[in-house]
Each structure stands twice: as C-alpha cells, then as structure tokens.
Length: 260
Image 1 (cartoon, rainbow, N blue to C red):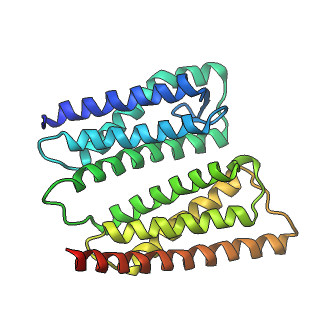
Image 2 (image 1 turned 135 degrees about the vertical axis):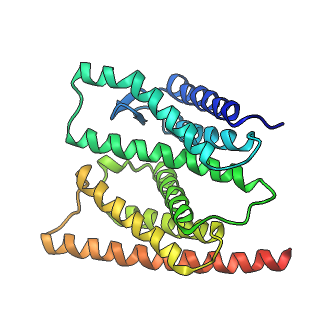
C-alpha cells in the first residue's frame, strides 16, 4: 500500500517519535544535550532505539510513498528536528545549559539526525524496482553514517564511552573496524565501484574523529611528540582500513553479479 508523500512522511514522523519516546521513557535515556539529541545516561540500548527511530522514520517516509525517493526521508528528518527544537530549546535556555561544546554538539546532532533519516530514505528507495545505485556523495555519506553507528555499537560491546575514555588501542581498533565496514557499504551502494569513494568515507571519519577528540577532551597519553605520532598513526590506519573495505566491497559486488 502506497500513499501520497505527505501522508508517508507523516507516518514516518509518528513512527520515529513513538520509538524515540520508548527509548527515553522506557529505558531511562534522560540527559538532554544540545537541545535536539539525547545521549546515554542510564541505557545504551535506549540510545540505540532512538538512533533506529530516526532511520525507521526515514525508511517509512520513503517506502510507503507512491514514488520511492530518499528525499522523503530527508524531509521527515527535518520535521523531527524542528519538533525537537521547538520542544527542547526553551528548556535549554531556561536552564542555561549552553556552552561552546554544547553548541558543537547541537550542530553535530542535527546533522546526524538528518543523515540517519536520509539513510532510512536510501534503504526505502533500494526496495524500488528502478533502484540502480546512488551518486558518490550520497554513498560516502551513507558509509560514514554506517561507520559511526558501528563505532557506537562496538563501544557499547566493549563498555567504552567516548567522553570518558583515553584514546588507546581498543579505541583505535573500534575505528578501524568501523571504517572497513563503512567503506564497504559505500562501494556496495555506489553506481560506480571506485575505490576512492571508500577512501573518502575514511577521510570523513578521520576528520570527525579528530574533532571529537578535541571537543570531548579525549586524553591521548604521552608527550606532545607521542600524541602527534598517535594522530598520524590514526590517519594512516584509518586510510588503510578504508582501502581494505573498498576492495572487499568491489569483490562482494562482483560475487553478487556472478550469482545473479
């Protein structure tokens, strides 16, 4: 059953908001950050319900539309952001909770919500018979979002929290695995299977990782030269991981073509 895009977007907003409320009220995710995003205070599972809610909303907005186009997922994400801002900004100002760091968090959270909703829209569009891959920009963005989600999931599994953990081997390995998966997805979604698209995903991940290290005051043990060496090693390691993920994506694409 398909509906007018306005109806499907409305359905996506409802589904997103209901699942998001379950994450907040059912699993104790109560800490408001940057007026538009909740971060885990008691429950990582609740946080992932909220992440899934943004993807699900974008998917529903696209999947149930007469013409399946990922932009409907983007529209759903914009509506959700406007609702969250309307509901939480007055509270944030009243409590005087805004600093330079929370301003950065707000911008990052807003972009993340848009990306997650758009990713849901892409998944919805992939179910259409006319689907034939996406443009490089969209696939790089999608790959980065997947890498970010993998990073958070692996942090959950290892018991690490970004803002309270020094940068170390486990943090690096989490990033490596996330970049491999993200660049792999980038190649699978792209119309043209070019290795540089996966590398671009790795570069975006590197930039965000460095920004998070600075804004969340993540400690890198050792002297100044050791810290520089760690950052250089991080860049090289993540770029190499992006190359590996891209090659795996190309190989997987060839195998899928052979099966069909």
